Length: 257
Image (cartoon, rainbow, N blue to C red; front, side):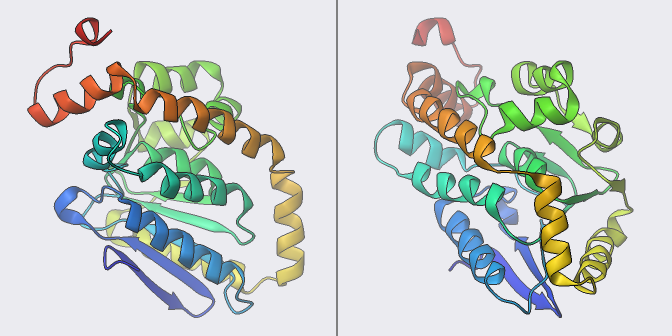
């Protein structure tokens, strides 16, 4: 467990807060483990009806910690195991997952939302998936789910060009349910979760399973993405991108090729 993931229960709702504000809530291996442990435990608890994931200090998450990425790319870190556990858990969570997103949602902060059942965003929410800029490729089945949900053109603009998306555009694209004032964001997520908690649990589980369908296709795509991502993490392009990030300079991919 880590103090950078705050966990509490509100009746039949489990709330998970990403709380590493000094690093813009960037996720570490320990944080991924804490998220997985809490999701798995509450999924098995009959008294819990839904999960909420939110950020802190006006930020959802800056994505994966770049220092962990760089260590893994140089063979001295093992971020991959914790990330893979988390992204393979997302498609098989049995109870509704709700996100309350304020500020930046970068990388996994955006791709995880395509596994959520409800997403509420503050007006300042900004979604971005700059994988290619880091010399890596999409993850969390985003190459499949983003294309299915938004269409190829919008997905390519985000995943390949790295174009960010505003809260208004995310609602139009179909992966955010509603824009809520920042002061009311978590309450909106809690209200929705409490409404779900009052539903007949077996009927809710069956309806959700029917709507979401068989997760096999999503898990297969995750496995394909993981294989490519692991290879890319150790590529000269990725190492150059991570190094340039810390050195605060523009990466030179021609030199790294």
